[in-house]
Amino acid sequence: MVTTLTSTSDLAARLGATGYLADESLATIVYLALQMERPLLLEGEPGTGKTALAEAIAAGLGLPLVRLQCYEGIDATQALYDWDFPRQILHLRALEAGGDVVDVEKAESSLFDERFLLARPVLRALREAPAVLLVDEIDRADDEFEAFLLEVLSTYQVTIPELGTISAATPPVVILTSNRTREIHDALKRRCLYHWVEHPGLEREVQIVRTRAPEVSEQLARQVVALVQRLRNDEGLLKPPGVAETLDWARALERLGAQELDVASAAATLGAVVKYREDAQRVRAALDRILTT
Image (cartoon, rainbow, N blue to C red; front, side):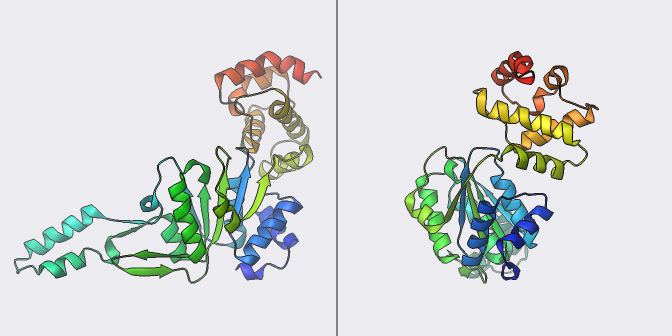
């Protein structure tokens, strides 16, 4: 499916058909990652559309999306595979209930059959390839997990001692995202192509809102985006709003029948765009100033 792409504009069009509007630099680096079969590391502030891009790539290319959500303490077991222990116990009990003499070696070997294997995201992506493997928020994992991931991305294969080595017939499309809460090691970065994802400019964010929420009028979309960008850049919020919050706010206002953004409607719907009490207090206090300047 990847080989059917003819150009960066072809890729941008496919992403656009899913509702994801990529600028030229982003479309170019994604196109290169696909053509070179290299992982792509996306860094940027939360809410800039990194995860949404992986989803759009999968939808645009007609590939299954396999997501691995990283978190503190994640290890290879959560990413690769595990054995279904309860089913293994039931299998042993069934053998014992059969009444025949149980061959211990055969019973033990039968426990590590494919039917008892629980494939986690990385193994699923290798077996289902071609697929898109999204390794989300890799910066939340530790150094040991990074080293494991680097090894997998170098060979696109894993070894299960009881079953043997499983290799991807076609390397999966690998997208790693990071909110840069810590630095990713150079070894992993060298394995990947890299792109820093910025918040969109005003015109592109308006276009995103109009594409993803066509029921929102041009005037309301432009007012919401202008205010969100002001909050994002000038108000020193604990959690600046991302594009997802822009969309939520525009849709919330439209649902309430708002024709334009004013102080009253903005204050009533703040819960769609700011998610901290301190931020809500700061924005409410500044709404009149912001909307009149």
